[in-house]
Length: 88
Image 1 (tube, helix red, strand yellow):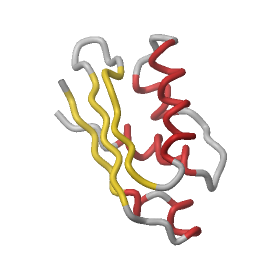
Image 2 (image 1 turned 45 degrees about the vertical axis):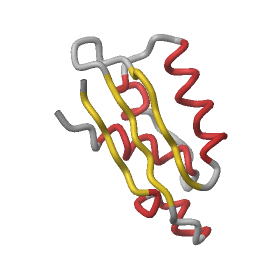
Image 3 (image 1 turned 90 degrees about the vertical axis):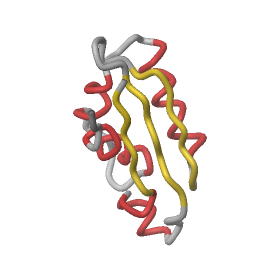
């Protein structure tokens, strides 16, 4: 298992709206690179969660969200940062 953590304050949109409280966390299977689950705590988390849910239902690897071009500045753009922070 691999875990990624990102403070909401690191997301550009959160800084522009001054809603920087919270943390995002994701768990990824080491072998399949599939997203096992996420916990998104912070502003607009529910809307961003739908993007992750779609990736999970489509059985996409986490790299699909890490490398996806996402509109700037949006909270969903934080998914690029979250999955780039994946650690062993």
